[in-house]
Image (cartoon, rainbow, N blue to C red; front, side, top):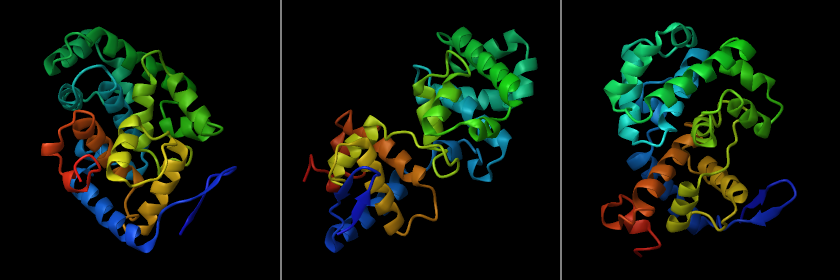
Length: 254
């Protein structure tokens, strides 16, 4: 049985050989079925740690963080990509109407002005304070909490709904990128009986240990986190058990 050390707390997980074997199989199936990261799906190379690639993911996160469908947000990103609007200098020198038109083409009719304003404000602040470089912002952050504060400080539209998904895929790349597990992840973990706690902190530590023991740790933990997010959001929360790729392993079914 493994001991999870979380600073002031120590708890014993249920990683006995039998359950560990089951969890290894579960993790591999999760990654296989649902594990493509959103950034990778968009063709963004975060692993390179290049500032221009990280900025692309920031723009995508801004688009995904708006109260609209993921399909529309992805279409908007593709429109920005075609228009060459995925670099700070290009966004700051773009004609205002061209930004609105780009968002309109993707279906952002209700949020076009708000989204364009948010992108320009955040990019302008990033340029003024960190020379347009998100890696510099990370460098100057004192810790995980300060990193979130600095990102949200870029503009009014850089909300937790933008910052948390952005940081989720930076986990394992940026040292200070340690966002709490999302509610959808915790829901999926509970349904699959992968952890024995409802605490986001303890659940993350237990999940990290399982990830390292699974043999999948040659890729990012965020890949598993993305799979759990999709499972929780698209299946568990909507109770689409009959269509779920993990239904045979689910507490609600078995």
